[in-house]
Image (cartoon, rainbow, N blue to C red):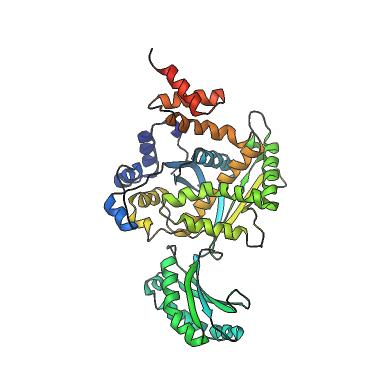
Length: 426
């Protein structure tokens, strides 16, 4: 399969869906689910969350051109913000000049935390827990024989002592669990809750919290891209200048948390839409990403950009990525299942690797724009369609008004209404 689909942007939505269906070979039911036509019925929605009164839709787009670890992917993205899908696709096309994105990931290890209070000697309690490590792991694994049969299960135990907290000393035991292709929250929470009595027996303390951590720092993904300077050439700028501008723009995010927050939000502009489209927990990914960005005690950039000796631009993104291809909404939501079919990933780790590549592409797009023409030029051109619709444009008038707004440089509802008036038959 090739992720290059010529002139996809110029097609109407139904024609785009047909093109994507042909390129990926997904079946008719998956194609229908991706179309969004009454896919999530109230009966399914009512079983997913509480107090359901309806459903809420987002546009579902497909990012093209992605090559990750030598394989092409068409990437589903559910997002309301203009320019995100276009920017990711464009940067992925540029990245192809250097072979695309190279991504590695660690095993899908999640943490469960068990908080122990009321200890007169927390360090002695820590030692007793570590001495019972094997027994603790055996009891944890007994709670999920299926996971163990699939090659997962509890891999290790850590014990942390906090001598001074607002409620006195406490010990926190961590279960490190390989959750395979699941996100893992239910698995590790069940293990932690089951172990509470045994932990109290070992330590003589009282267990309070028994819950996973969304700082999945043992479940990391690292994406990199190497782009020849010539691939960054524009009509008015040399690629070497563009590359230098990207490096200099990233430097501010590395040293300044005010810039880093917006810089990392741009990364998540690419990541969150894929996470949402596949029915995964985007709040968990956000929490883990920002906690990881502050792991040194200072909030900083999740990416680094530099110029290689040969002049190529090299970017790297490292962050936690706790994703699933089984369980939860990934299986109950028809469109989420279809999105996974479209991606054709075989494991949660592969999904995480593709998602990280999209995040790195989105970051490159934002830095490229910021360091050169500015973020608004391209963004407002795409935003003009939203303004045209807000002003009342329909059908072919949407693009006519949007193009005129962009050309005039006045992307406002007032201007759009004036243009609509001119289009009315006299």
